[in-house]
Structure formats: C-alpha cells, structure tokens
Length: 171
Ligand SMILES: Nc1nc2c(c(=O)[nH]1)N[C@H]1C(S)=C(S)[C@@H](COP(=O)(O)O)O[C@H]1N2
Ligand SMILES: [Mo]
Image (cartoon, rainbow, N blue to C red; front, side):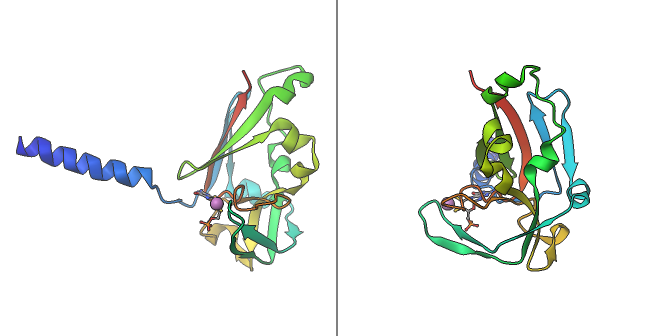
C-alpha cells in the first residue's frame, strides 16, 4: 500500500513535469507524415545551404507585447530545405489540400499550409535561423529556431527547438 502511494506520487510529479515541458534545443528534425520518404535534416544539412542576412527582427508576443529583438540574424529559407520532399500525392492540383505541422521539443505546434510555404510571399520569409549576433547555430540555445519575418505578431511562429514537421492533408 505504501509502495503504491509512493508510485502514484512519483507518477503524478512526472506527469506535471511533462505538462510544462521545457524547450530542449534540437540538432535535427524529421519530415514525416504524408511524404513518400521520411527525411531527417541535421544541423550539418542546414549549414550546407547559403545563409542570407535577415534584417533585425522584433519578436512580439501573441498579445503584441515586445519579447526582444533578434539582431545580426542569418538564416536559410525553409522551402529550400524542403524542396526535395515528395508529398504522397501525384496530382499537383491537390497539393493545396496539404499542410505542415511544425512541432517543437516541448510539443508547441504551428501549422503552415502548402500554399503558404511554396506559393505565397510568406514562403520567402520563413527561415531556419543559422546565426544571431555572431553566435553560430550549434551554440544557439533556441536551436533549431524557425522565424516568419512577415508575420504581424512574430512570436507565434518563432518556433524554438523544432523537432519534426508532420505533413497532413485536410479531410
Ligand atoms: N518551442 C516553443 N516555441 C515557442 C513557444 C513555446 O511555448 N514553445 N511560444 C511561442 C510564443 S506564443 C511566443 S510569444 C514566442 C516568444 O516567447 P518567449 O518570450 O518565451 O521566447 O515564442 C514562441 N515560440
Ligand atoms: Mo506568445
């Protein structure tokens, strides 16, 4: 009985921890779901692409409050990293039914549609950050960090600790 109570207590404590999970830095992410072949993208793969200079970015919370400024930012375009991903659909017209759920290491989730990524100006402004104020990707606490620089409230899609991208399709 004593042991059972103790087990329940420990279990309870562990579950509470899991609910307010900390963002863990990530060193790779997978692209999975409705793709022909699952792809794993590492810091090394990200480093191979040419990084662009990105203008300083004010991060605003979902309530519009300032959450800091990102300075001397460099990044690679997310759509360049994803360009070889084959959706499980051969008719390009139907790509419009697909969406991408970006999931972070603390289970924070953000959705982008296929059109948003590949067929709109927003896609030209979604970056994986490769450096902030001279600090390289391997050392960034928030790695792997995704930003969407043209958003109104930039905090929402300032995704820290990207862990996976799950490709889905609307019902
Ligand atoms: N992994 C992860 N990224 C996240 C969040 C989160 O909870 N987990 N919160 C988002 C929100 S709502 C905001 S406003 C920004 C800025 O939050 P910060 O001040 O905690 O950095 O991070 C975004 N990125
Ligand atoms: Mo937020």
